[in-house]
Length: 256
Image (cartoon, rainbow, N blue to C red; front, side, top):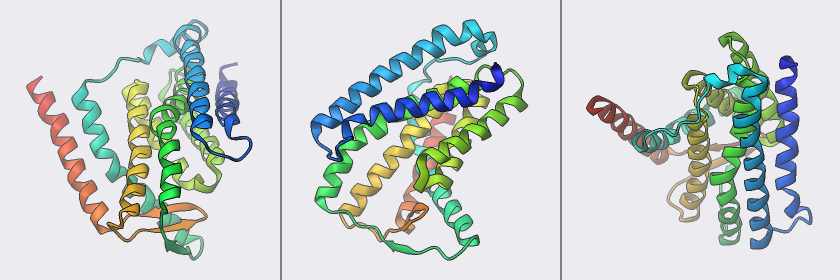
C-alpha cells in the first residue's frame, strides 16, 4: 500500500485544488468568488492536517520522524529574504533549458491596473493559502511514510513530475521548485521549511507584478513555458536580500 501513497496523494491534492477553484467556474473573478475560494482552501487545509497529523502516523509509524514544529522567527525571515535569489536562479535555469530545445520567444512583461487588481485578489490565496495546501499534499503526505532516504528522494521526483503536470504552462519551473521544496523537506524533516520557501516564491512573483506595474524595470516573459526573466536590478537586489537573510540566520544561530 505504501508504494501507492504518492499517486493517491497526487490524486487527493489535485482534487482539492480543483475544489478550491470551483467558485471561479463561471470564469469571473470577484471578491466574493475569492473569499469562497479562501474558505474552501482553509477547509481543505484543516482536513489534510487531520490526515497528516492524526491518521497518517497511525498507519505509517515512520511519518512520526517528521515534525510540524514552527521555526524561530529569524529563520522564517532569513529564508524569505533568500527566496528571491532562488527565484532568479530557477527562472534563468528554465530559460536555459528551454533554449536548448529551441528558440524561446520573449515578450515585454506588462501589467494594466485592472490586471494587477485581479492579481492582488488572487495573491492572497497564492501567497498565504495555496502553498500550505500544496506542500501538505505533495510533500508531507506522500514522502513522510517512507523511512529510507533513497525512497524519499524517489517519491520527491515522482511528486515533482506530477506537480509540474498540474501547473501545465509553467511545468519546467514547477518541477524545479517542487524538487527544491521536496529536498528541503527531506533534509529538514519539517514541512514548515518547504511552506516558507513556497510562500516566498509566490510572494516574489506578486512583488514582481507590482514592480512591473510601476515601470521600475524592463522585464521579459515567455508564454510557453511561462517564464519571467528578471532584470539586472532584481538580480542585484535578490543577491543583497540573500546575503542579509544568510547573515541573519547565521548570527542568530551563533548567539543561540
